[in-house]
Image (tube, rainbow, N blue to C red; front, top):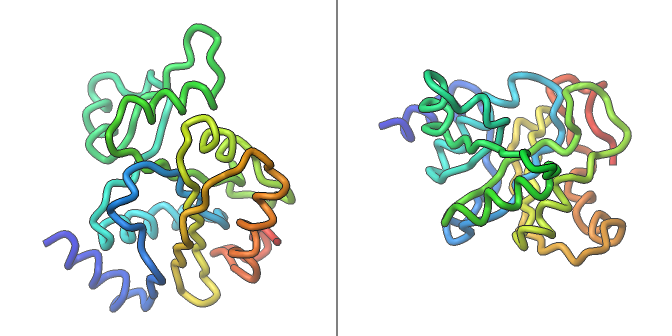
Length: 183
């Protein structure tokens, strides 16, 4: 029932298209969504996740996962991030992958909804450390499309791998065009 509602809203009411999906056989990955210019991106993501009918996750500091909100955050795909013992975000997030049979982590490498000229690199090093592929996703408000790319296995050479990943986002326009990440 929810899938039909999400489909109706996304395709019929909003007039968007979904190009490709994340195969359910990919149980662990990092989903990088670019550009991230508006709070509306979150709602687009919820609709797409519902249409694809697969689990897509996020992480948050462990303090968010206590009563009463902890139950809700876990129910919608959240996982607590434990950075105790001097762990950095990359190590702590890689540990989350180890604890789950299925974990598709959605991140915005821009790290903000404001204009940026360079992406943060944490997503890349989490994928490397957790040994999971990166799935590029573009929210193109100019074309009203959500495009999902093919999974990409990182090699350890950030600069070379980004030469393969970034062209996927060429010409993509965010909700607020002047904040869009330019490739």
